Length: 198
Length: 209
Image 1 (cartoon, rainbow over the protein chains, first blue to last red):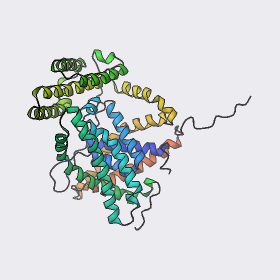
Image 2 (cartoon, each protein chain N blue to C red):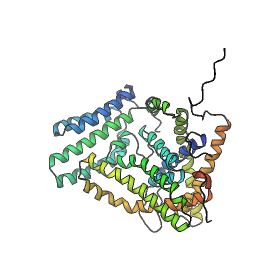
Image 3 (tube, chains in turn purple, orange):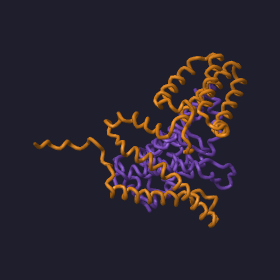
Image 4 (cartoon, chains in turn green, orange):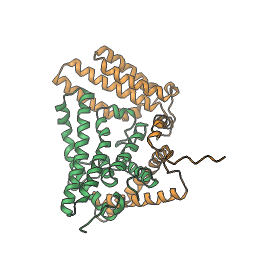
């Protein structure tokens, strides 16, 4: 399959399916991870998975497809939110951040993490990629956005967002484990990735 | 997805005009930092939302989170800066979001998609295939309930095996199944010769006369 051309039907279907997956993860009852009693919403997990599994272009496109549908008014975000108001609201930046997040995760995972041959190094590299894209990039857009929209000082906005960091770190670990697992059983996904050493 | 047609006088306004208004309003709201003007805008925004004739209970559900966040912002700003600045930014945020909700609530989903299609038309020259875009959008909507029911089924199965605390055990089978069905569907689409080749990339056939 040609992973490089975004025009083939297969790629379109993959983009659509992952957009639906991100949306569906917002509709299901939240998973409780292990002993942690805090239920986490799973949509960021879906964004991380889209990048890590589909690569930069298709991963980003599936987030774009989802957000176009949200913008058009479908209540696809967690808690049945949707419409133009969500983007203009105080948390709109995080939503916009999903798009470059999937791009960055996909790029790092495809071109760096999956090239690692030792399983331990590969997991660490993939986890770092997911953290950089799924937390770094999203917060880099979300925190200043909140500050600008609400008029709060940047430091307060940053402090408020710190509450969500532990949950997001957990999601990054889960996304990494799941993505590497799926890549192992479905090797064609990122254009003939060699999983040497197995 | 609520099934009901948007009602009220705002539904008759073309979607493009509403988005244009939203764009202008977002600039004006930031340009005018006076309390009386912001109050006027807020009243206007509330009127706009009420004009969509949405049931109040549904409105309450939609806006609960927003009110919560704005409340926190207001409290923080009152404590850290002046009372006036707090009122201006809380009101600004509320009016902007209310205007946006009014636009969404008074515009049918199909009308919205038609607007996006118009806006995306110039990208045709950049090589984007609008047939593929609408295929992706409509397929996404079709797939959401599908994936949700698969997720619930897998979760139940893993629960029976005592794996209910392991998200990996739920998500890996879900993704593998999803990828497999994506493969099947794309073969089915290709077998039916859906237009998936990029347009205007082919050389024009020689004119024979």
